Image 1 (cartoon, rainbow, N blue to C red):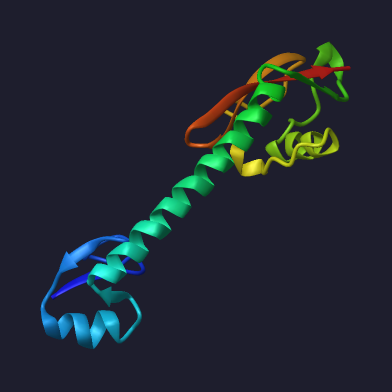
Image 2: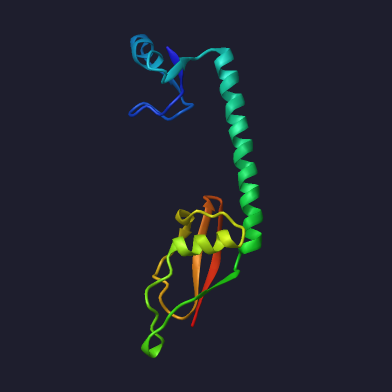
Length: 146
């Protein structure tokens, strides 16, 4: 029996996959637990429509992220930090602090999107990668000043 998966099923396939499984497994487990629907001409049309809608929404999101990227790419964000002897910085600048500073500037970027390779704990400029989407990445320059 052919079915279309509505959710990921461990060991069988991902959501939207079309599988050929035994009738008993399909009826007694997949369909009964709302993990799949029987494959019909109509269910295939609905699946194609949903996939098309998701792709359009994702493209719209990517376009919005590209606008943010153009505005912030290689922009310098300045942080005033306290220093000790020999200009040693107390503490480090975290992705949360960068995210909060971007929110103040009007950009809502989650701290999980900000990738810091080395701790930002020295005066000067450090490059930080921001990944808004797997297709939209850019560099942000963080400047630490006294």
